[in-house]
Image 1 (cartoon, helix red, strand yellow):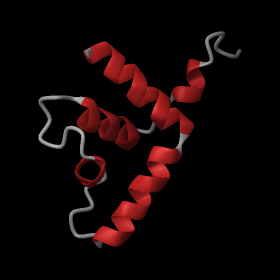
Image 2 (cartoon, helix red, strand yellow; image 1 turned 120 degrees about the horizontal axis):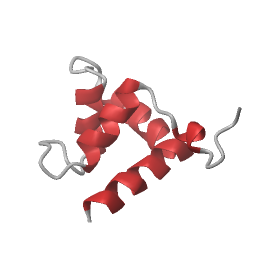
Image 3 (cartoon, one colour; image 1 turned 135 degrees about the vertical axis):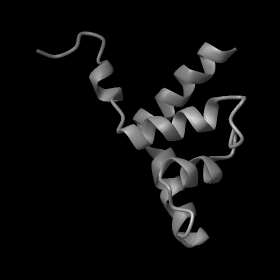
Image 4 (tube, one colour; image 1 turned 30 degrees about the horizontal axis):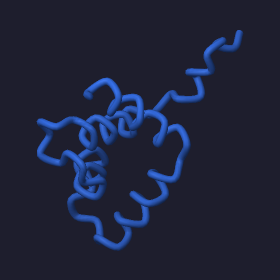
Length: 77
């Protein structure tokens, strides 16, 4: 049975959710910094910066990520 509000489409993996939380939480040391939030959520400290930045860009282009970020930001302000 489909969710009437379509929120199932916004289901994130645990790492995606952690990324959004790190990115949108004002008390997080990675707040507002997608690159650092991604590295923390995906535990890719040793990855090359160029590869990580590409992954961040791909993640931020996803509609479910953009919508979830907007939802979290609206809850904070």
